[in-house]
Amino acid sequence: MPVEPQLSPMPRDWQRALAVVAHPDDLEYGAAAAIAEWTTAGRQVSYLLVTRGEAGIDGLAPAECAPVRETEQRAGAALVGVHTVEFLDDHHDGVIEAGPALRRDLAAAIRRHRPELLIALNHHDTWGGVQWNSADHRVVGRAVLDAAGDAGNRWIFPELAGAQGLAPWNGVRWVAVAGSPYPTHAAEVGPGIDRAVDSLAAHSTYIKGLGGSGTDPHAYARNFIEQTLRNGGERYRGRPATLFQLFPR
Image (cartoon, rainbow, N blue to C red; front, side):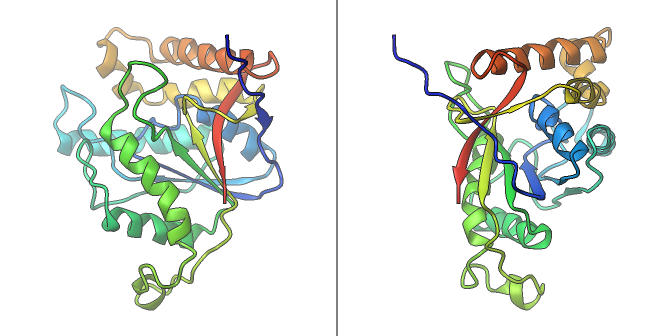
């Protein structure tokens, strides 16, 4: 049996992070536990959502769903100490298109926020087995990795520096991919666990849409988060942990 590579602790010498994902709730399925620990330690984390998750609830039409999911995302973010939550307007849930338009929007956000750490969600084809990853996750995750470089190159999307006044930002030092089947680093979590549970449970309309109106969002969140972090800890030091695939810049 092959020996699993040893995971390293996540870097701690940074102050600002920007988390970029496709949908409301993407960060709440594990990454939020680490984010809660980081904000408690005084680090600044902001969220950028490419869509409002408007196609995510079968029984709710997109025009009704979008504001509900936006509200739930803002509430969930606040519970882990994130108070800057932005949404893009030109990309649509379920059919996000890869290409320059998405990269430009992400590069602009990186230039605005000037993070040292970018946080993304699994961009690989699967979650580590036969469970296929969604198109939106794959497209946005890869675009984040590309936009980290785009943001620092003045000759890519020069209109950002011109019309928008966004100077290039070469300060991204790492991109940390949550949920990757190929983790390289881990962030131990403790007090952040309960806040992460509350953060996921804040997506109550979405969770009930997944499991039916009788689903208890808090019990659902507790079971999922604790199992995920236990699994992470088993691959690290035996203590609950959020795992990341870290790409140095």
